[in-house]
Image (tube, rainbow, N blue to C red; front, top):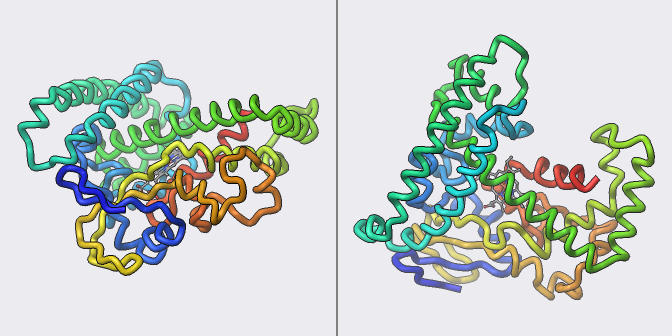
Length: 334
Ligand code: HEM
């Protein structure tokens, strides 16, 4: 479907075949994200991961250290304020999306009053994250600190990267981690519980499995989580019906190419409709039904290999928090 959203020429992809073309066959062509005003203000000139241009080597250096580490480590005193500001920033940046449809109308950005508000909120974020970073820097060397922030600061201080990591890069990445990792996880947990309450048999089966696997010994190690096959199917089914990003983050066409016989010009925005794809009756029987059993003994996973099920996206821009995102939920249920 082609839409003209303000000045932005946009196509919406709602079939697994074309999603595969965008995220596999032509993945490199669509690996760019559109430029947004919200990210420019909020994420230090879009120097983060989510909105960074494809091929940004500085960011590539950073992403390798991100996997597996997602928090500040031990609780720091400003953490709660930090999270509350990030929540407000993300909400506000989303409401600014309308302005991105008219990028050349600068007067509109100011007139709406939203841009100055976002800039003000961003100043508050900058102070808080600055304090958290100073606190973390003081601890480096004192005790062995094992957190994403301490890892990033160490990498930066070693200065061994071809493209140095700046403090602004670190601040922007911390925003991504909390912005991308908190709402998504809580939304899935709420949906899973709500679906299980409406499907008591599913709830009973999941509870029985958790009690059988962990019994009275309690949660002991990561490996035991692999035994929670039914719970895993419940989470997959929740991700299928209620993906936290029903429309994946937009991509932008970097090179003219052809999708299903249509020529897609450079600069076209592409929105993949993961929600519609995961309910496509050609791929899913009784698609509206919450039925975790469909994933038991099924090869379909959420890692971007099956384009009819892409809650974490696929291709070069697939969610880097995928393992954390998935297993964090299993642990929280337990
Ligand atoms: C249920 C949990 C989560 C879901 C459903 C989810 C989903 C997504 C989706 C759909 C994308 C866009 C992928 C694409 O365009 O192909 C994405 C990107 C991203 N996610 Fe997640 N995510 C989750 C958790 C997390 C967590 C826990 C983190 C961090 C620890 C995270 C960090 C990111 C980042 C940094 C990106 C941008 C990647 C890029 O543009 O290159 N996400 N996520």
